[in-house]
Image 1 (cartoon, rainbow, N blue to C red):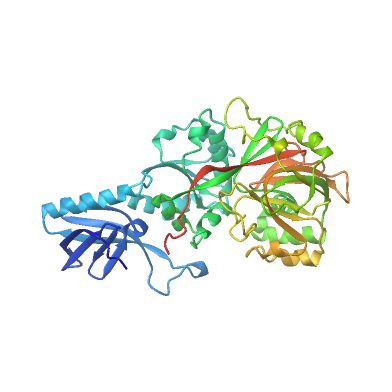
Image 2: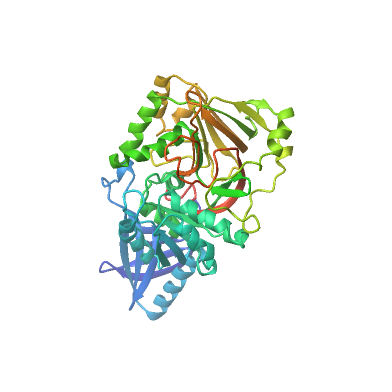
Length: 488
């Protein structure tokens, strides 16, 4: 192994003893029996007299683990006392230069949603996020969300030049609001470049889980905060859902059928806590619904065998994809903001599958929640959505599949089709056993459209229960996310 170039070497006092200290060009800081990797472990430092106090995170002693067997990270301060003014000046300069070279964020705008999940986001910020930001000398502006779509409103007029990123201490909902706020700005093409971070503090936390699991990190607030501080970034696909002139931008998933019904209708059992999902899933499987309708999609390479090619129908269906009437909610202005990918959809290789369907589930990232690996092969910026489709199945087989969602093995069931698509059209229909009732279309955990006769069908929705076009813009957004080798 090639020896690292040493840029500083000096005598220092540490823990009452004089010892040699070195700083390598690769950011390895050593003294006595201690070694710190500046990029991975050092948050920041301050100077008091001749003492440099280095604020770091290190793994706890063996035997102290968080859930899942992952080592617990603890904050630690190390003090090195330099022996001369020149040494102090040189060490301070070199340490600061190295930290600056890492491109870490210095100023963040932070949303905290005090109402989401277990209503613990404010406490998570105070005890898990704020101490790490302070140690890293990160300045921040804090904004508590006060009502639905508040974050979207704030982002629309936020002076982004003042910040190096936007962070959501919340579940997935606030992150989605931020995305939609950025993309309806007149300067959306500049605004969407600002990195987005998420600290898990909601109910599902699918995006935070996907980010942290991608490099073997636990889905914990402290780990998420550290990755934001480190400043590593990765691109993320954005799905544009269109109906007429109305747009909605999605980061996580779209569901119609079984998954949407469980996610939304189980709200009536919210008093049960997280057990409501399992309880209502059992109900829905035992009284399984099937939905009429059709899907059309452009398969990714390798998945062209699914469905039937569109021929004479193609012109009728594809040409009319913008004819559907949108819902009663607020409309987007096509004259301002992002209107979706510029693609000639009629030139694509569309294929079609007719229902009935038990479930249609599109996913942009692997995890739908901390305990649900919905799409194990999903990637952050492959330009595709992962489609998990169930047309028909035995109830016992479906029950078994539901128990395997925590590890992704449900996609291997014989009744499940799992493929990647580049564009998608949903034509939702009525329930097979009750044609007077429609279904629910769930996007990123919120209702996008409701059919007649369904749960809370009297409430307004952004779009109507009709044809939807979903297109993917590869790598449009940017996330604070770890490198795959981070903290290994």
